[in-house]
Length: 337
Image (cartoon, rainbow, N blue to C red):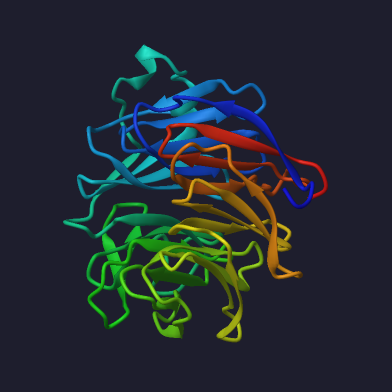
């Protein structure tokens, strides 16, 4: 390890019954949400390593996981072609254990049709505008975005599950990566092929396209200020783009396998990445190099996530988490970051 930014903390072995593909923090809390091919959503206390909640509604692998900015709801996509919204309080009333894996009812189920919601994300917008919720009252509105196997992003109403509109890349490619900017103005998608597409959600226009990778793109993620986009690819690179000016910033090389996920530190100074080579790396954006490598996973590291602040709680030194094919969760405690 080339610097002392993060140190390996608690670990949960055999946290799920199969591969763990996704992890995301509940904003403002020490609670991590995980999901994957065993069809179960679990919530973990990062300080104790205990499972404090579970959700299950079907027997299909979960292909996507997201949490709303208020930390009250979870959004999943599954291989049964359905998106589900869950109330987090419902999960916390069902602690881990044999009884916790029983099926429970989501707050909303959207049948999106075949491969129309491989990835799904909450979209937070101010009221008004065609793409926004049909509810006409003032204040913040929430819709859903999903990626498809036909080169499009679909937008959906949270109130009734209807499709609102479609954002089209004009290429019929499987878009298995999707991100929505925290300010709710932009959506990015990528997948088969090396192109990344960024849309303006309000107008539906394609605002910029990036093509720096040489292979399929596995993940896309916005910075907290919505200005930057980080991407991870089968070409073993992590790349960083300025979406406001439509320009490439830099590329990071050092993984020895497909990079499966990458996410920007809330402060913008670091990027964490997870790879098929089992490693979790931390990259310094300013120095444009890898400053830390962690090898806690015994097989592919599928996902990484930085701890998130909420409107009420600001996390000054966020924890980092990773999950993987070895069914384990690893937490990394901040030293200097």
